[in-house]
Structures are given as C-alpha cells and as structure tokens.
Length: 241
Image 1: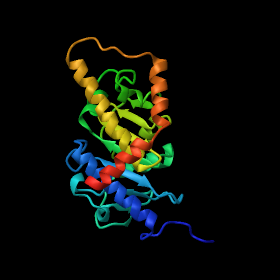
Image 2: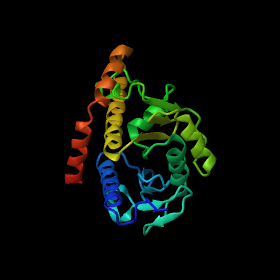
Image 3: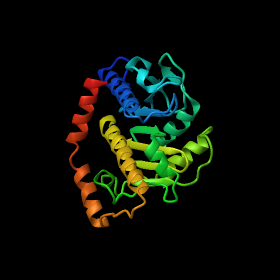
C-alpha cells in the first residue's frame, strides 16, 4: 500500500513549519507569550496523527522553522533538534485526537487569562465588536486541576471544550483552535484585544452595556463568513516578523 504521509522535506510540511514559526514570533511581538512556556501546534494533513510543535526552552521570538519539532500522538520526537515539554504533549495531543482540531494555540496571554480568573470565567461576547466574532464559539473549563502532567488531564481539557474552538481554562489561560494557522492566529490576536477592552471598560467602574444576543450572533456570523482579513493579516506577519 502506498504511504501518503508527508515526508520531512515536502513543500507542505515546510510551509507549515514556516507558518508555525511566524505565528510564534508574531505572538511574542503582540505580547501573548510567557517566558519559554506555552505552545502552538498544527496537525499534518495526512491523517497520520503527527503534528508540529514548538520546542522546549526557546522563547517564541527566537523560534525559526528549523526549530519546530515533529512529534507523533504518543509524544515521540520524529524530527527536530530540540526536546518537547511533557505538558505540551499531554494537552495538544489530546486536543488533536479527541477534539479533532487541526491547529491548537495555547497561551497565558494577560487579558485572556484575566478573564479566566473571574466568576464568569470568560469574556462577554456581547460587548465589543471584536468580542462578538466569538459569539457561540466559546467554552470554559472552570475546574483548574493543576499542571497537565499526565494524559488524563489533557483528555479532560479536550472534552471540556465540547466542540468549541475557543476555551477559557479557569485560573490558567486560553486555547484557540482552528482548521488552519492563519485563521487561528487571527482569532487569538482578536480574542486578546476583546478581553483587553473589556478589562479596561470594567476598570472605569461604570456599567457595561452589551448588545442583544441576536445582534452579537449576527456579527459573529458576518465575521466568520469573511476570512480575507485574517489571511491578509497573516501575510503581513510573514513579511514583518
């Protein structure tokens, strides 16, 4: 039987490595990174269960395509010059396998994480226009259970997503998923912007005024129906980071 898996030098795999490095470097520039922690991953489109992941020990702004590691669903490094962090494997492998998400971006970005500390655990998707793009797309996991140091915790997080592509992890951070890197990164960036303006508005002490649910849903549908801006944004990031 012919093996349809991508080889390590295929153009598609090289493109994915480059784009994952672009996303990581852009996230560092946009203030979404935290030390050498957190991870971005993207599954290979060959149904092999393999995925690309940023390595352990590098700050996001220094990651290049050559630093990206190829791993299998069990955490074995198949290609790459760096090791991978165990918590990354437990979370990302489970979400790729159970939630069937192609691209998984996990951060402790400041404003998104701030929302995970509130009683509501997430942002209000009826407030800003940026927040409305996430209406009906957000789940939250209120049950912080410590570091994800085993496969069970990663699987629990994956199931808590309930099919959503944005999840707030209570007392922890956020995960944004997508079918492709440029769309997922665009969502990550605008999720943090939406959380930021909600925090700023709340800090005034004045009453916040959400729009009605039907309007928020319509704006969300409009945003999801037109992804050219997402793609143009990522093309600009390729040129500038």
